[in-house]
Length: 256
Image 1 (tube, rainbow, N blue to C red):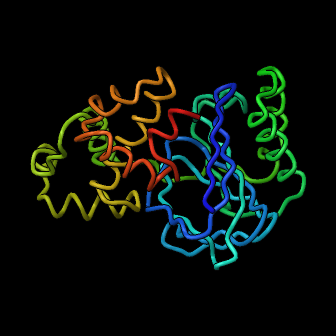
Image 2: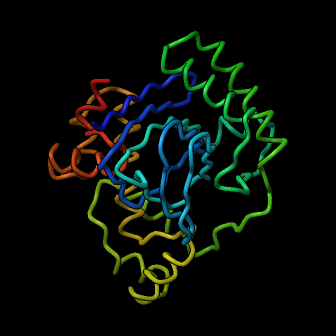
């Protein structure tokens, strides 16, 4: 049986999940994400290579790092994840420039325990002050083991394209208009964007709409305003795409 439990506290979202047949579609998150495989094997594609996280494996995802996800076999999978906004993460580690996780999967017992402590505190709705202290404790281990400032920044064209996509989330994606603005053919733009991000412009645009809908639900709990502001046809349309990324429908998420 598929189970997805989300809780948000102190600016951090925690997910407790159990899956058997469910498969995440290729997507990315604006946040830093880190989690632990509790049972089974987590299989996913990341940056063009296949990854397997076995029991006690710590999974680390950078913002906008495209990936999918599934249980490796019919035994299924239990895992937890934390999602931390980049601004909060950088504030905690006292950095101004974006940093990156240098390894996608590590087996580090101290890191595992600190991720579990923070996720358990959030999922059990402990005091916000405690969660903030546990976040600081977690990042102290990350700084020692797995952070790098060596990463490829978006080039000017990709940055401009992303800005255009983000500014039109309530509308239909018009590749011809974007590519014309960038002085590229439509197919040159698709090829260039995918080469730099690992995801197509359409997938990126749809993912941004879904993530924006989630932010609106988190903010005011009004699922129908999320449908309108993010340009979905109706709630069914939003529910379908929301579930492919978050494992639960937008309606179900709004009632957590």
